[in-house]
Length: 166
Image 1 (cartoon, rainbow, N blue to C red):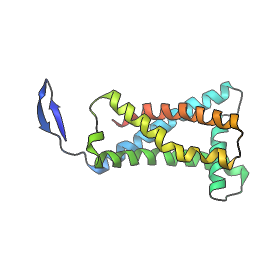
Image 2: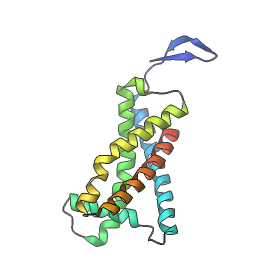
Image 3: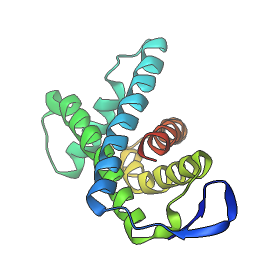
């Protein structure tokens, strides 16, 4: 990969590839931090709306329970919490792997790092998000609220992830 020498935008140098392990580690840490920040905002919103703070984890847990045919409703909050904190860092690690094999995606500015992370979060989350309205048989208005909220939360995830993992 080529990069500009500091202080001279016309000079170029060869930048060695970042080791895969380092990219995966950055991605996992970034994914964990981003998931935590997203969840804190989400919990705050639910509490402000007068709903239990575990509402989203319950919804995610119900979706996972339907996906794996697990029928223990009392454990769905724990299942949702576990799924959230496995998926966030794993998606971060996957982003690190993608960066390793597509060097053109490596960036040298905060704006591009955040832009790529937000786009990645929004695109990669869609296949998972579509399962909830299907499995939980949401109405049209519930589905719209679900996708609107998910868009906002994954926007936060992408911004934090792009900042932390850069």
